[in-house]
Length: 327
Image (tube, rainbow, N blue to C red; front, side, top):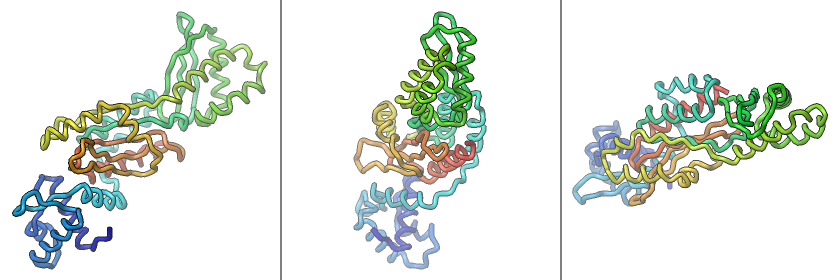
């Protein structure tokens, strides 16, 4: 729906004022907040028009107006077109991803904590593109009880697992060197798709440790089908404006299936889903984490319909840019 520049400015003020202090907008408050050289009567007409178009609603006939779900969506869509990365307190995201001694799950958890602390809203990170991780090193170590520990270094931390197999230290070292030599710098997806061809061409070379390699690949195949989910609930208790808002957010955070459904998509930019009026859902601002041009994960910040979309989108933009710089 096309809106004039003046109507857009008034709607933006209405949304931002309501987010900031839950204050309904009036023609007088618009006059005070803008440099628009028009009368309050003209502003009142504009507010009436925005209400008629479905962007604002009036709770009481003599009171001011507040945004509707349609008003929030228009505001968010225009906001996301020109969002700027300005949240300086997220500069330590770079330090997190530069620490390659952390596991992937620890890095994901730390990123979720940083965003949640910066925005004061619950944050969820879903890793749904493990096949896009770039491999750097393999370390396979024999353990007691016919088990081996597998450490896989990637561009976003290491992945660790155990495999049920008895093997000598030498065979483990040979398998580690083989996998590192042929797949360092490749994505995990590439290795999974091409490992059989490599094994066929080197049957004699890898015969002594082929069982180890087969078990490593089997474990990675299972991992590749999983979705790593980390939830940081900081900020829920601060939703004091409405107990119902807090209940909606907590309900969503407790539903793993719904979280995956919301975040598991192919979007390649920051986006937002605004809850409908009277809906039992909550709103979410989300962004992808891109690795080598492919998506590794999605970040979602969850809250009520009346959440601070501008600061959240700004914070997510910082995170996305820092993570891409850290590749």
